[in-house]
Image (tube, rainbow, N blue to C red; front, side, top):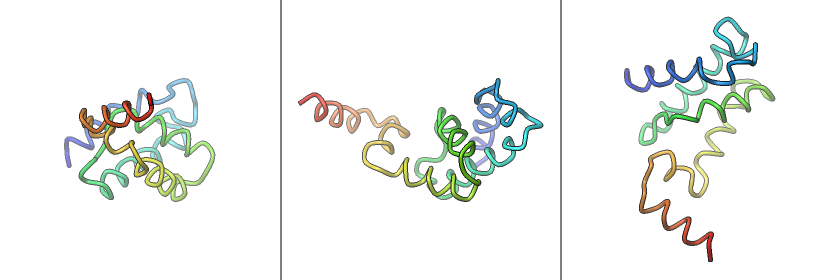
Length: 101
């Protein structure tokens, strides 16, 4: 769990750094951390993957944290996203092959 928290903390400062709402003292900085940690807790098999912060940030800019979490879970649990989050090369290849046909 400590490793997940470290990765989230590392990415928080890199997430839309020019957006004042997401800067360390901005109103969405804490909620972004909370949403990402909650997702990692709800989906421990996936945990946190670099880049999730950008998706969660965009959701938080448009909805309250509780709705952003639900939207993030629903978005990342669909079709091919878990394979990409887990960097599951074989499954990613199957999806790519299917898209090219």
